Picture 1: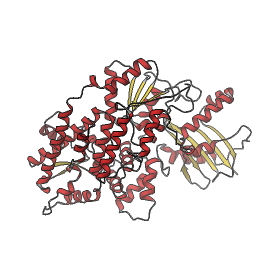
Picture 2: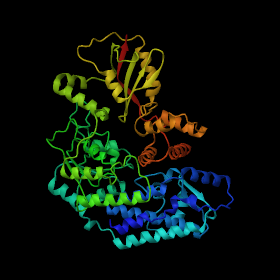
Picture 3: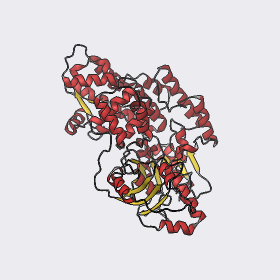
Length: 575
């Protein structure tokens, strides 16, 4: 499957659905809606086809099932386009958002899969799509395009059918990689918790279904499609996610095996397990360390952490495949994302070899430690130093407050408040005497609340309760609100697009303001992360943000009212 024939076929694909601008008739008369579509095509042009090709390459190295599924989806989309053209029907094209530079799905898969079955003929799938009419689909007259569009669709479809025919049908029973995982779970570590990582949700779905079919119980699945990955993390690792003063998180249906994409590679306590499996190797090698860091952290009770990495036949084959992919990408001048710094390079070759030999160094800096991990470490140290005092603290009710003297490191005096929703969402903020309120990061609030037993407590500020009220009726009324708390992809996007002298149009300005004021919706965050990771230009990102905003798919802007908050504690700061 990973032969030069496969790689050469992928390299030579035309991918016309991602280059529609090349097929526009110069003489076509456009409606206002079609003019907007054409303008979007021009603004969104770049390396979309190149990134789709890179997606094929990556999935080839992940799992044969996921790769063949990608080919089948691509063929199905081509056939859908062809059916519409042949019958003079409007063509279902994606918006700029849906032709985003992703590394997981076919860019239109998430919306189209809900409306069609790949096993149906194109006519039935077209009718189903028309009936469901996904918001992300733009319907365009086929008369706008030249006949070359239809010809190139047929050419690619024929080539991909040829690949699938040469592979034969995919059989779970003959999947040696999956068999190795089953053996690890049932023979090598039959009673242990095991965390299995893969880059792609298709691979994760495939593994989870196969393990359940094999009779392995307690299997969970966490991907970008999961409603609540944190809840799955708690079910898998209840002890390390326990509230202070409790031995374990209260879980009825505990998991033994958790199959996850990198949605769980950062920010989760999973150290009830000490075994991590890399079912495939991520293209950014640093993710291997991030994955291991989910279990190799404070609270791990095992003397050793075991990392298993699955290779296709041998490590030499993995290195060979990546180098051959890199050669083809370089030959075609198709850029790949900035975090793909090891993509078939000498550095990646050495990193994979070091991983195989068990000598891959941890390159994380101390600054990369997340606040939740640091808080866990501080609490663990407190329990060991004075168990009785820690137990008394854990038993304290909500609404605990204190007041301390202002320190040289404090920018303002006022009141700092910590709130939590019934669903477990935390929020931190500070209110100052002049009426200013702002949210705090996890690291900021840890420093603000820090105190020693020797530090004297002071009398309450006269305005303590008044400032608390300003916070809980203001920014902390919605703990998910993240105005100014720019982290992750929001910070990256704001620095690239918001903190510049470039003047945007009104719609883009509104979209950027929403991005600054509110957290991203999960789907928007995933799409934008992938686009940044894959090297999207500022123009591509601007268009994507504007389109998401216009479709009301960019941010979480309002509170549902179904998740009440409570004040956990507050700290007054006074001169």
